[in-house]
Length: 591
Ligand code: NAD
Image (cartoon, rainbow, N blue to C red; front, side):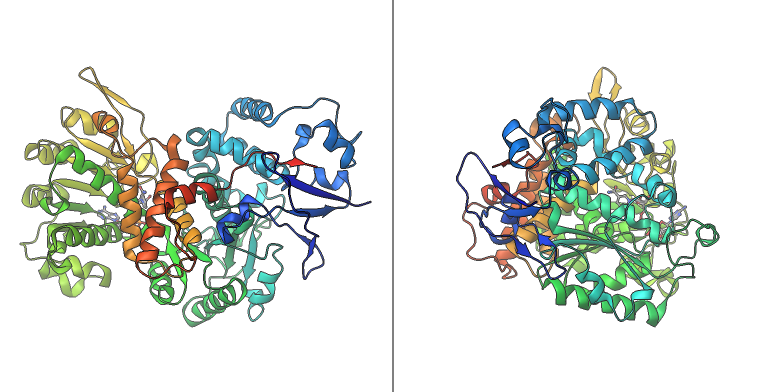
């Protein structure tokens, strides 16, 4: 028995399109407003289901007890559900209540994943309406534990696994994915999952979680998102010896074999989905992350959140802090502790923004930024022995061997920690920076909380409440001398969903540094005087959909300005346009 479901919004009558049969013989879902992110047209959809029983097991259309009497009659649901009708809001309330009963974050994570597999719209409604509470459940830190235990919590495959076994057949594998119109791919090879190292094939939790945020925070429709894990083996001995490990049991392929395979993947993606699909590289090891970005930035729409997302969110915090400090970025001196992916990426974007603001060449603005690695200050005399990525930051100075002496020598306005090593902004270091700044800017970006360079409380206490503080991991507000300080969290989730959405709605074909700057400026623009008063240099995450719309609009505007947008003509009001394209998780009414 077949029924045809027709969705209509706001009581509008809808066209009755015939089902679209896909190559594989299934029915392709053609979403209405969800599709707006792709072609600007609000298109009603039709989809055939075999029976009410199948409808209840289809997470894209299932509404559980929210099916009304008419729908239960029309779609063969009578008897398959208990008699009560429970609206989406009530379902959400019940779910939130039961989620809060779990003590362990991992159990909450599993319950959320199970919900996503059962009822996609309810999953997104819950996440969107409770973003501050549930972000740490579906993403960091819980997702890290989920990846570590992926073998044992794995129930149903999510996303696409492309392993070396599929060498030469990657295009065929992509064609096995049921959706044809993909807008954002998040891909990992699992080599450096968060701070947890090589988790091989179990890294899949990361692309899945990240794409959930693209939808919930950014508004990209779920069916436009494709999580991919590339399995080239793992060097994690524990996994290799684990009888339940789900990935390839071999050492990682490297060098030519690795890059040839990645190239086959990149070529197949472009061939299958065209030039406008965003490929976000996630949690690749350092050397591959930089290399892949460099190789494909001019031929594909690629983005690396660990490098570019981080830089953009930190820059936004710095730009917002100017409201508290006054002046421009070029008036400041920056000192970084830890010179890896995040540190060098942030330093470079600051130098570019300074250069833009002050019209000073970037070679000169770099000189206002100093970096400290495990051997001390990066200075010219060390240049010969420095890694390639550190060389641009070697300035003229006598050698300085530790952070405290570097702070005293450089007298920075801002101290930024990206070393991954906790407790390194000691009382002496913080007091030193506070001794020559009325409002020292301290960013302790290392994660997780235990690795934070200092805590919010330490920063406020040791500076007698003068610090402007932000961190990578969240800290609770701090009371000091009767004043309440709200520490900022430089969470990448502020930037990448809006940035990606801006690329999608403008049909951008390349990511340009200016788009990252545009994203930073838009985020900084959402910090109000009221926020500043509490020491906040990031707006509250609870406003994230509005923030993302502004970021998307600014990024799209830049894409049009640079001639990189293909979605023509350019909408006049890009903020309104972005808002109108955003996926909303409310249930549809079925005729
Ligand atoms: P990375 O491994 O690329 O870089 C860390 C660098 O610090 C390495 O070069 C390492 O050699 C150096 N280092 C290690 N110990 C040191 C020491 N004792 N003294 C000086 N330098 C030392 O890692 P990454 O991706 O750059 O991330 C660094 C940290 O930043 C991580 O803790 C990560 O969680 C955090 N991070 C935060 C955000 C955010 O807040 N939005 C984003 C990205 C990364």
